[in-house]
Image (tube, rainbow, N blue to C red; front, top):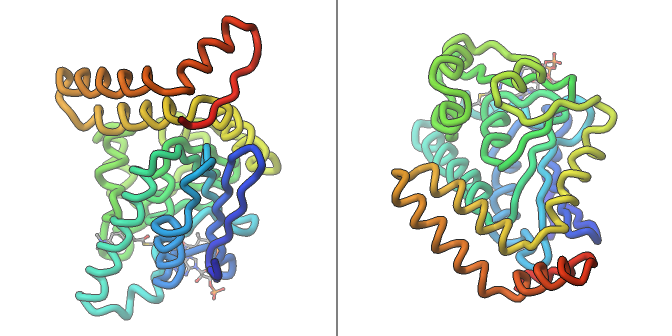
Length: 261
Ligand code: DAK
């Protein structure tokens, strides 16, 4: 696979761990790191038997400290536009991937780093994590999907406060606003993320993916259309081998063996 700035390992449980690996710059996403992430997600993320994906940052201090400020400062407008377009594409691939994703926020998640966490389905934060959108301090604003994804999560008022001030919030405060789902002691963040991922990995994968699509796409739609989508997706689950296996296993009082078929 040959990536310098990301690492990936897949555990026998079907849980994949994708680590952004540029610790000397707090995993800030320069072009090379973003490209590694994008190439991996587009071409090398296993499609078979990957049941849940954890995304985290290398080292003990940061998830991702945002876009690379040093590199951005020297970009032409065209390069800047390409950088932003590419980040949108990569984050969209993560959000739209049928495999559920968990951000294990092990430290700073700022700007584009917080937006990466928002592109994931579920966020768990270390109690040491700090989250925020410092972009307005740099003359830009959260534009890798952040200004749109955050308002859908926490409502316009709190989102505007965070974006307009550029101030960071603690993990606990992030929890109280729904920006993260859970806060855990720093030392156990990966253990907790893996436990959550494993509990998803045990379930019927096509049903989990269909549920992800129902929630993601449905929340963009008017209610009647969203309910139609839900019906279509649940119908598609009924015809799967896993649905037959899940119900049979229940009646036989044993654990199901799902195959993703
Ligand atoms: N970029 C580049 N280098 C970074 C970095 C970053 N975002 N964050 C940290 N580093 C580097 C530091 O420069 C330092 O490098 P050396 O000096 O050792 O070479 C090293 O990482 C360690 O950082 P510090 O020495 O600063 O560590 P501290 O513990 O003192 O402080 C910190 C940690 C996270 C509070 C601080 O590093 C910090 O404030 N970093 C910047 C965080 C930030 O502002 N992030 C947001 C970036 S802007 C767009 C929309 C959106 C975006 C782009 C375009 N459009 C719609 C057009 C996205 C924007 C962003 O993400």
